[in-house]
Image (cartoon, rainbow, N blue to C red; front, side, top):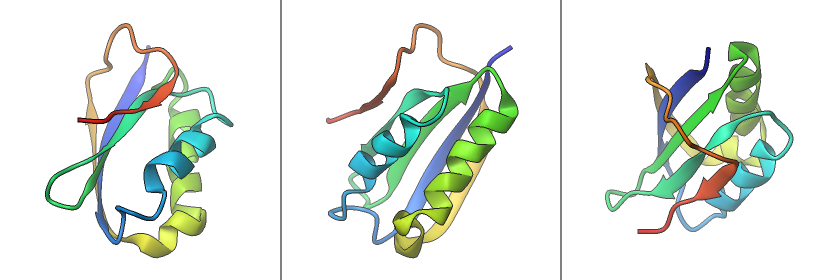
Length: 93
């Protein structure tokens, strides 16, 4: 069964390569999902994996990377998995 989490990052998370770095980090994990900037300055991430530990390790790597210094707040919750997701992408509105 797929485990999915939605994360909202607050801080200086736009204009610092956050989305691109997140996508690069995702390539090292067996996760699918997407990341996008929000108009209010936050970054919204949706990620899922078959192994909950894999998903947690991916999210922890984001925190431990250079991105962590830009994150002031992180709001995370478990959400239903999205069907048909392939790979990890940057969503542009």
